[in-house]
Every structure is written in C-alpha cells, then in structure tokens.
Length: 500
Image 1 (cartoon, one colour):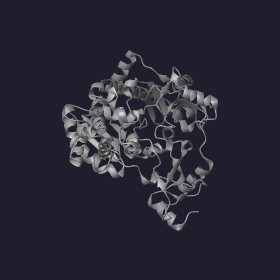
Image 2 (image 1 turned 180 degrees about the vertical axis):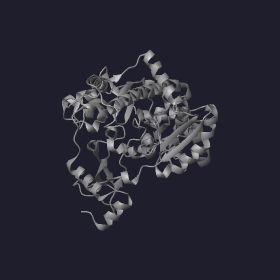
Image 3 (image 1 turned 120 degrees about the vertical axis):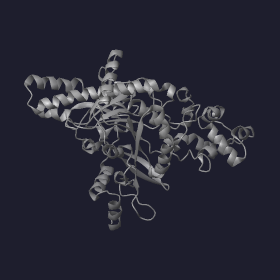
Image 4 (image 1 turned 90 degrees about the vertical axis):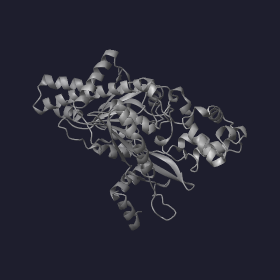
C-alpha cells in the first residue's frame, strides 16, 4: 500500500512508518466511545468555593508567585478566523445585494460599533473612493463586506483571530493578542516578568511577531513588567494521514499522500516544550475589555490557588510514600485522592503503588461555567483504561449517541467547558513531566471532510484538554459566566461584553 516515495514523504515530516500503519488501522477500526459514570456537578466533581475560600486561594497564589516560580500563559492562536465570517462570505456570494438575513441586518445596522470600523472605513475609502456610510447609502453593501474579508482590504477572512480588532479604547482598538498580553501582566507575572506563549500557524508567524513587537513595550511600561513572548508552530510530525472512504491512503492529484493538521491535540507537543512550573491555557478569542477584566483576573487567581494548594498536598504525600507510609497514612492519602482529586479506585487495589501512580502525574484545574447551551464539551466522571473513574472533559464525538442514558447525561449536564485551565507540569522533585506519556491514544476521532470534490476521512488526535490530558489529575471549579466570552461569529463582537 505504501510506496518508496511515500516512505520518503513520511520521513520528511518526522513521522514513522509505524505511526502511519497505526493511523490506517484506526481508520478501519474507529475509536471506542467512552464509558461514562455521570455528568459532573457541584458536589460531585465540581467545586464551588465560598467567598472565604476564594480569598484563601488567591492568597495561596500570591504566595506561590512571590516564591519566584516560573509561570507561562499558553495561548492556542493558530486557527484562521474564516469560520467567524461564514455568514458574511455567504452574503458576498449571495444572489441579492442588500442585507436580507437577520445576521446581515444586524451586522450593517450596528456596523459603527465594531472596533474595526475605522480601519474598515479607511480601506473602503482607499479602494472604493468612498467610506462605509456612502457605500451603504448607495446600496453597495457588498463592497463593504468584501473590503472586510478580502486580501486587498482588511483581509479578515484569512487572518488569525488573534490579529483582528476586537475592542475599542480611547487610545485605539485592541486585538485579542494584546488583551492576552494584558491578562498575562495581571495574573501570570512573577519576578517582574510575564511569559506569554502563542501557538501560531507558519503563514502568520512573522505577522504575529511584528504586531507583538509593536505593542508589547507599551503594555510593559503600563504594568511595570517585562514581557518574554515566545511562539511555536504545530509540528508537521503531528499531522495525520487522510484516508479514502475505503480506508486506503488518500492521494493528491500528483500521487502524493495527503496529510492534515491533527487538531488542537497536536499542541500537547508544544506544551511539553514549555519551560514552566505552572501554565495557564485559554483560547485566543475568550477575552474582554479592561472594564470587565477584574472578574476574569480574580477567578484565574482562584483556580491557580486551588492548583498550587492541591499540588503541595500531593507533593507532601509523595514524600511520605518515599519514606514508607503507615497504614493510617495510606488511608489518609487514599481519602485525599478520592475526595480532592476525584479518582474513584472502583475495583483497583488501593496500595502505595496505586496511590503513587495517582499522585505523581501532571495536574490541572479547569474552570467550568453553567451550561447555557453553547456548543462544545462538558465535565464528566469517566472510566479510565485502568478501571478507575476520574474527571474528564468530553466532546460530543466521544459519546455513543445511541446510548440514551449517556445522551441524557450529555444534554442535561449542568456545566460546560470554556477552556479555562491552569496546569502544573513538574513533579515533586522539580523535573518536568513528559506530557505525551499521559495521552489516552484511544480518544481520537474520525470526521468526514472533502478535498477537490472528493470525500475523505480525517483523523483528529486526542484533544488537548480532552484525551491528551486524560491521565492527568483533574479538578473542576465553577467559575462565573462573565469569565466566558468567546467570539464564534463576527456579530458576537456586538455583544455588550465586547463593547467598550
């Protein structure tokens, strides 16, 4: 099935022949659905700290920062914003010329409220000889939309979300990239320095670097810190083979194999190369203007405080195990693992070896919000490969839709995952964990795509906050809805939370 030229192409990407065989086998067999025990809820897997507890956790985080630990803010920022503008691309290609759908009407009725209005007005004037208002007055709405989307205009249809103007300020509009730099200064700086890492696509790397170079110094002066800003790209070695519907390798017109990005799960490799004690992870588009940041900052400190408090306890117990724990100590440690880390042994033998296994691994605390019907994953109690039950973030693709009980759990779950994570990635001796070792490789999934009009099957790696962190210690904390403000469509920028 694989030819000599295929093996060369595979080797050039840093992928082994064995990996390709495994991927082809996965296309044939698919991935097993996860076995669920229950949707997580407050009191059963989700912690809802009281006001007094929040103060204690914030204090614990401040002490941790003051001790000089290295903290990094990790921002997945490689995706293009094209999906955000799907409705406006449709309008440009539509057989009608005036706003017709509710979405189109809202966009043009409130166009002056977008942070990119002035920039769009300027490119319309340059390219069309008229500003936005004049173009709309003569019914030329499509020229306005085209100048927002196309390369000769703002090029928003191709740029990454991190480079779009999201929020208005008196001194000028800000991009999500800039908002993340501000956040880094407010809750992730230690030793007078904020370390921020962006994962970007190769095509946008230089543009990102240029924009960061333009903006970072101003924020550094404003917040009295230094920035250490780094970038990485998704590795070609994490791309996955595409297959035909009969599970044979999909080939391009020139006969070469087609590889596709393996999804955000590929970023576990990037995360693994970050030098840090603690890493915050948050999506690029989940940012708010300065007036709403205090709530976000407070809760980031709370979940970070939960993390370092639990980690210290786990480290203390590991040292006890090193010196030989008494029966009473083993019982106490087992209670901590079950009650605080939410790992139920089920039929496993709870001995020193089991406890060490559950304590000596990366740890993450995930903020979860009340479920308001947003698409995406949720917090569940799930069976692991070793028969234990622990907390996991699941996507709908991992759940057997034919299982009525599971679907009820999924649709009636009280909470949603907004990708609000803080992670501890070093062991109790100060050594970094090798994160790919903690991935559950059975949690990938297969989706249907097309290329050049031909149907194909695409293989997604276990998601970064799903199966890629499956074997981590996981704790969920309920955070306010105000900390979750994603931008999935351009009109989401018109929501009050994104207005100045």
